[in-house]
Length: 246
Figure 1 (cartoon, rainbow, N blue to C red):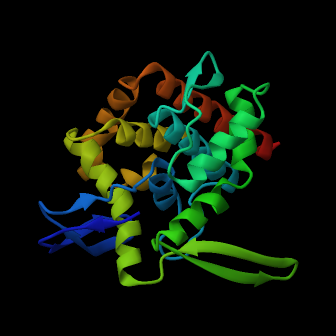
Figure 2: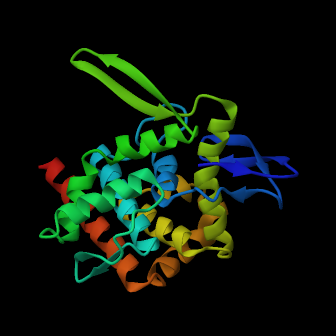
């Protein structure tokens, strides 16, 4: 994800981890390459450690849903009665979106959304982390463990930290003010609600109280197929967490 501004202004912005110096102002805008799963990844991972804020399986399902949501927003796939349908076979310009569409095309007999969420969730965090790394938003950091190694995707530079901190702060501001939310932001809000990330976006009850009310209204306003994506994601997350507690 990239942000740019012609006339930057540095403001102190309240985030869940404290005050952060972030470029804002009228010239500050979302990069055209910003994608739904990228935004979800930045919100779902801790800025300082790179670790998932949620159970990793919940984060994986949220990212899987966001990847499918990207294809819906691009007009490549549709969703009806829990089944995914390819509407446009033309490959997206984004490599990861292209890969996901190719998987759907290669398995036309499998349409069930729940099945695809579970399948894509297996490596969605790695795939989206790699995409963000290619964009220069995060850096891969490999840590050795007794039984092997584990790679996290986390911000290392000041600009990268600001970008990651800005993701939840930006969504919180949109939810509180209830203005300027395009369909991608409304879908992002729905996936935040479905996976349990709300407390990391609207973390200040006094400051964010209007956002909590607006959040449900915004999700209810989603088009049917995107609302269905949010509902299935919420059910899938609830199921895997319930099974994990047994």
